Image 1 (cartoon, rainbow, N blue to C red):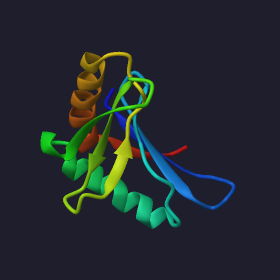
Image 2 (cartoon, rainbow, N blue to C red; image 1 turned 180 degrees about the vertical axis):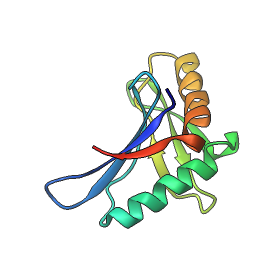
Image 3 (cartoon, rainbow, N blue to C red; image 1 turned 180 degrees about the horizontal axis):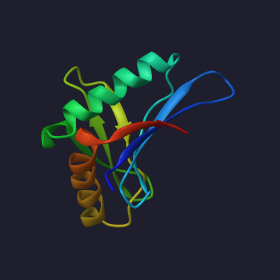
Image 4 (cartoon, helix red, strand yellow; image 1 turned 90 degrees about the vertical axis):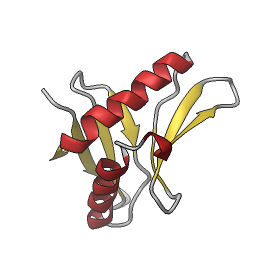
Length: 109
């Protein structure tokens, strides 16, 4: 089973997506978009940029937890990871986004 993008519109009318790995774990979450159409464009941007390691910015949270953000060519953040316990786990997360995003299906949550 391949990964999938789950698209969900909340009570406020904003739309978000999560990229889930084949095991169902969320590996990347988007910002809130005003329109579903914009969220779908965000998914296309993730697909395009996930294969380029230079688009991943490795970061460290205030508590020392490693995480990453995925940026588009214009330097806009298009997705953020969860917090990881180790840098190695974060790198595995980046690799998972690169493997899953290009072919992931899009489903309504």
